[in-house]
Amino acid sequence: MRRASILPVLLAACGGAAAGAPPPEPEPDEEGPTAAIALRFAEAPTDEATGTPFTRVLLVTIVPDEGRSTTEAGIFEGACQHVVPREGAVLEARCWWAGFGAEVVVRREGDSLVVQRIRLDEHTRAPEPEEAARVELPPRARLDPIVPATLR
Image (cartoon, rainbow, N blue to C red):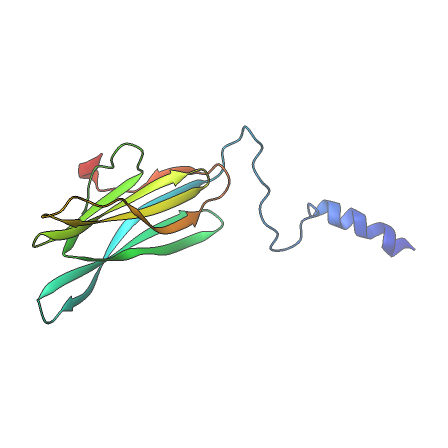
């Protein structure tokens, strides 16, 4: 009988949370954690037939207590560089090689990051953006975009 009455006391002393339980949701007027986000460029294999270099573009998201995740936006012709994000975007990059390339645009939609890509050809009008990836954020997370100092 005594053991049964001690268990609630022990659970209360430990906060009543089970190991590995998800963190509590923020209150409606409270901001969530800060998520650092960045675009990372990695060399991809060159097309041996044409000599065209390619770059892999990745969205890196770092959230406290959740760690780091990497999401591929795509592999694009040429070299890529960060550019000043257009209105409504959080991050943006442009890749280009010999008249072809792409723009990678990261936008926030609610508690998600949407990665869009726009294929470019200097001889045609840019098509509508296509969704390349979607990354879920913690509720009401604040964003801390990591960009080169030259874009600040």
